[in-house]
Image (cartoon, rainbow, N blue to C red; front, side, top):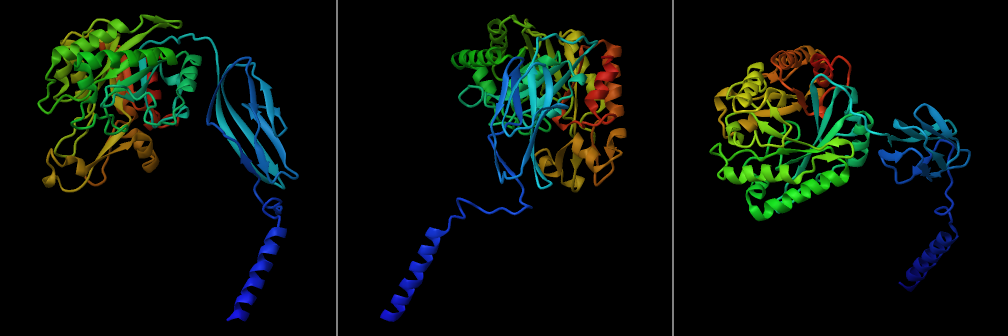
Amino acid sequence: MNKINSLLFAILSLLLLQACNDDSADNPAFSDTDVPRIYIDWQKDMLFSTGDTLRLYPDVSPADGATYKWTLGDKVISQDKHVEYIIEEYGEFSLKFEVERNGIFNSRTSDLVIAKPFVPKEYEKMAVGFLSINGSLSDVNWNNITHLIVTSSVVQSSGLPDITFDGSTLNIPTLITAAHNNGVYILVEFSGVLGSYVNGAPEYASYNFYNAAISPKVRKETIKTMVDYATATGFDGINVYMDKASETGAFNDPQGLRDFYEELAQTAPETTDRGEFYLSMSVVSGWTKSALDGVVTTEGYDWINVLAFGAEDLAPAAHSPFWLFADDAAYWNSVGVAKEKIIISAPAFGLRYHGNVADYTWGNLWEYTEYIGYRAICNEYPDAPNRNRIDIDNGLFYDGINEVKEKAEYVVSEGYGGMALWSIDNDSKEDGESLMQQISTSLGN
């Protein structure tokens, strides 16, 4: 036994001695085919002003024989590993850092936004794009919109809005600067908890926002937080998307709700250094819509966003038919909202039914339906843009190009204020497929 222990000790000592003499961890050997790795805290969106210096100092390994290239837009600004570059032009650019070693490449890219003075674009009708917190700067085609609404800063059970946007990676300052660079007004939306950012539906039986709104004590702090955040961050206004009405289809304290909308209008500034500070509100479709009859004409609000979708049925049917679009607009006009203040929304998502119709009830319909972004529908079905229904299973219903064209032309012919899309991060980015592009074109912008 002692001989075995002595042998094990000798082997262990030899291994330890070899480990002490092995410096491969500190001085690793690389092959010619190893990918040069880039080490830097890289941001996908960067914000600067003209006159700022872009300073980035990445580490690269392996670096022997490596060459470097920094490209801003279509201009090479450095061929060193580190870059220091004075920014002289405003606009939106793609920044790329590229490393090449033995014919093997690695790179990092970022969207760089450089601020310029705000000059609002001219337009015939408002073309409003909703952008969810799941979206990004690359989802926005500024040519197609006049106003952008970022949805949503959710009001929590404490009554305070979540201005971190639930940890979203959306870079709000960069987005605001890009909007202003392109002459687009940008608003922040405050809402209750949304069950899905695909269809924008409030979570069932969640009334955080409403409870904060009707409480005199909580309401004041909620409004102050909303206004302080919007003005300090650089937004051009606030959109309010109240929790869905209760199971009875009505809010139990309509006066308290009206007090909230009135106090918000009284607290919000009238202007910013870029012009008017806007207030708007979203109203849902369907049988609960009358719950907001008492607030839609509140003084100080510039327009209402009519979310003209959500007409699900206990049989496969379109959730956003043209008749609903027209009926909803007419309804809000009938309760006192001027036509030029009515912005009617179309959906950039589809509704698919599954299973047997005989099994559907209002209590379990969610088990047999799903919402799919329009872009995903286009990817799955190449002919989708020219249709508004795919006959698969019990049906996939959505708005295609022809549907939104008809709706936008109706907006123009009837004299409404404009049209919106929920949400542009679910829209196609392709020319000829984009719903927002068709809306803008049909509105005459």
